[in-house]
Image 1 (tube, rainbow, N blue to C red):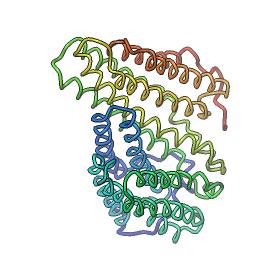
Image 2 (cartoon, helix red, strand yellow; image 1 turned 90 degrees about the vertical axis):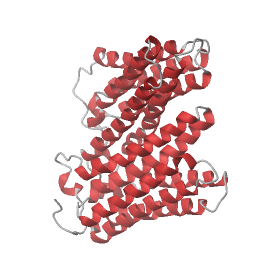
Image 3 (tube, rainbow, N blue to C red; image 1 turned 180 degrees about the vertical axis):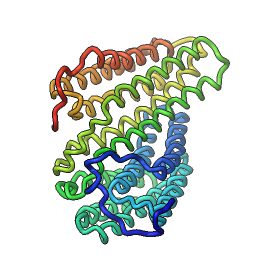
Amino acid sequence: MIKTLWQPPRLRTAEENEKERRATWLELFYDLVFVAAIAEVAHNLNEHVSLLGFLGYMLLFVPIWWSWVGATFYASRFDTDDLGHRLLTLLQMIAIAVLAVNVHYGLGKTSDGFALSYVIVRCILIFQYLIAGYFVVAARKLTTWYATGFGIAAAIWLISIFVPVPGRFWLWGLGLIIDFGTPLTAGKLVAKAPPSFSHIPERLGLFTIIVLGEAVIAVVKGVSQLQWGFASATVAVLGMIVAFSLWWIYFDSVDGSPLRAMGLGNMKIGLIWLYSHLPLAIGIAAAGVGVEHIVVSSKTAGALPSNERWLICGAVAICLTALAVIHLITCTLGTKRHRKILAAYRLGSAAFILVIAIAGAALSPITVVSLVALACAVQVVLGFLTPPHVQPEAKC
């Protein structure tokens, strides 16, 4: 039940960073619209399995992910759960839904709808930061910095609507660079209003669950399109092993995020950890699409088509590389040496999978997905064989 119809924003993390904070029901409901958005962008990749299609998939995925990150970090600091916050969240959900509807037109001449939807999402966030800065003096410099940077990026996206393709996409890229660079250049301003050290890792974990769910749905969808057979069943099981292995090695470390460094003004390590989740999410969702295609390809004899081989191998290699970075800077995993060993394992498997992509032109669908699943499962086994043997480091 709403405690009050309206209350001014307050800096929640100043009093809550020393205790556990969980996601609210509103945040979980908010996530549902991103389930639909990711499903649409994955479906778009499913229809365009090629290098150009994958680049387009990434271009569409990044604004969706960044919209979610923006709302999550704002709520982590200033969520009041009053009527005003709920209504603004509803407006964001509607804008994200429109964004999802426009995904299939997001790379053509009618991509202005996708751009306009993103502008609306960002303008709502900018408005929230301006209100928060007005009432929370301690965070005013940070909220002004964010509102200015995000506002410039949103203006560039708005201008892109009037620019023909492909110039429009170059403006999107410039806007995203400014968007991502704004928190990176905030420096010690974040120390005065840090994000919640327990809330953000949980929220990012939930988003990772969303993309893992999309990968599982893709596997089920691929099998459901065919008559049940040994080949398709085997590929489906191996695809589930890939998803389960990625879940295992990620969620063994997510609670030990290095976000506390941001509270000390060290933005670099916190943002590297945060931004590494973007290629991880991109890779997981794309891997699901790849397995779906392999399930269908397993019905026919012969080698797996090169575009499908590159999709599954490239997607999983991206995931493992992102996990290598995450594990390298997650201090609770042990000493720096131990974290380097874990990162080396991830990078070694990523390199092995890329070799399959390069030299596996003659490999069958089952062979390709078997090798990829093996490379992922080995990471889980290596985690058991290389315990840290020491207490985790207190800080990086």
